[in-house]
Length: 515
Image 1 (cartoon, rainbow, N blue to C red):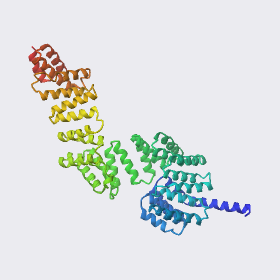
Image 2 (spheres, rainbow, N blue to C red; image 1 turned 30 degrees about the horizontal axis):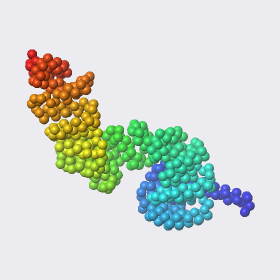
Image 3 (spheres, rainbow, N blue to C red; image 1 turned 60 degrees about the vertical axis):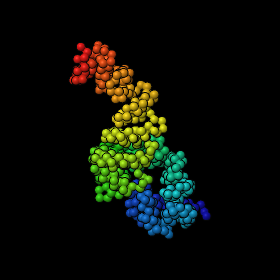
Image 4 (spheres, rainbow, N blue to C red; image 1 turned 90 degrees about the vertical axis):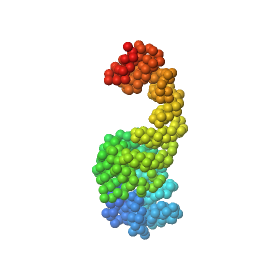
């Protein structure tokens, strides 16, 4: 073969690649942006073999496998159709069958069309198979034919990322960036890798650089919103998410993400309004029933909370239910007056994860707020029985025992608090109260030491602890009068009480005994 003819063949191959890429340029960009709905629509405008294949890939990402199979079957005898059907075989765990189809597709183009290699790489990367090493091998074949091709490097990076190899993925994205320095997508993809690695401080500059180069880069907007969401900077997350929705395909997932942002920012009304907009006429997104149920509970609309959370639990797979689902539903039942049903539902929440200290504490606090003291005690006991209970855990348990009039147990529990935290003023205060209830006559002034210690520890913070300080000083004034016959000391204490609370009738009455 002479040199000029070889050059002609090479030029023809390059033109073929260029034409194939041009046919799907917008759709391919949408695949990179992870805009599956828009990508499906874009590729659906064309009857070209490659575009039908990529429409099928978008349908795979949308989990519409019947539609994807139909797309691939419509070009079943073509190379791209075989690649698509190879993906179907991979999902059916028929790796050898998939490999045969991929090899046939490559052979039919004499192993000289890098676009076919790219399609095979994407098919493997988009499949459900665990071992995706072959995706990177096929992408390498394409890049070997055009080493400075940015698109092929992006696909190679995507192949590595699908195999959970973020380091090699970023290497290929960096090559892509070198070959096209003014292109946003490599930076956006590098940012995505760092986001998935939870290295958010590295994700942000790359995602922001992508937006500098392309203010409408949907991938960068998406992951910037998610990164700030992870940082709990909800106002900034909302800005990026709003723009993503404004210029993107306004998918239910994007809208749900915005609703999540509103919820965690405690803007529950916005969350409710947005979710109602999403589910209007078609409530197929069951997870939104959870979020709107939570939001209704937070706004005090307990019947609405029950309605949506019951609907959520009816159709949610058991392994996808979390403790907070039962927790919020149980609290809503109790708020509506159905304490029996509410209590049982809250118990379901604890039964799901009996070692989840935060969840149990939230339920105990619910019972505390509802003044359901027996149930409050039950759950604070559970917390204290978990490994490594804290002083705060025992303080809560002691308070619950006190409310249930188990004064001796409460007293012993507050002693445990002081063993762990000797400077706990509240423990001394509560021990004093327990002593009073154990011995109402206080013939031996058994609460004296604890109330005295409490007052020493809170000296200088009278405004913050005024009610407790008054109680302690009134008690000590009574002891001074009754037990010690020390009228002068009693008068000093009572004058201090009246200074804190001029309307305190008990202190005024006791002053008569100091004259």
